[in-house]
Length: 187
Image (cartoon, rainbow, N blue to C red; front, side, top):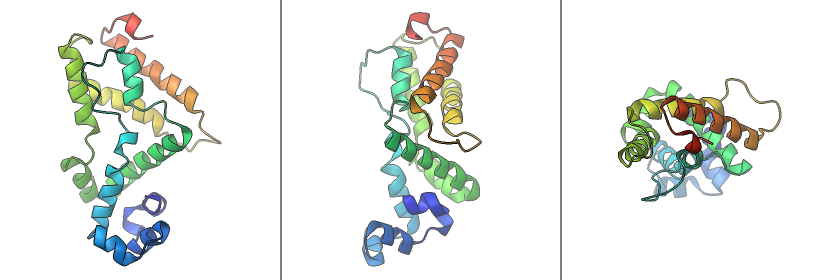
């Protein structure tokens, strides 16, 4: 994954990846017929860092608390840094290589939005949230969270993860209040 993050999909070579992994190119090709398969496997193995979905059936937690967990806002620094690097990689490479974007999203390798839509709809169905368009709400929440996690400028120094998580949680609370979520659930 490091080679993809550092060089991007197009410039990372199988030789780079093999060297980083302490493997021969032959071993890499035996497991992954081409670089796209390797990239796909790298994304699949880390997508849990982006969203913690699906959730356990009949989970009984406040919606805001569960959203904080779903969006993985309490990751340890190392995992959070890997998540941020993964999200930056996918965002950057999807713009540069539209065919890679199609591969990731059209084949369901990245299903974050769909999983969140399903979870939100289930919460609405069980009466835990007011009824709204789950697709619109998922898009809004993802914009709020990922917009904050993928800043337009590089941070100066280490990211204060606790403060970042608290700020994003507060923003999600505002979204919930805006749709009429009861206040005791938005604390």
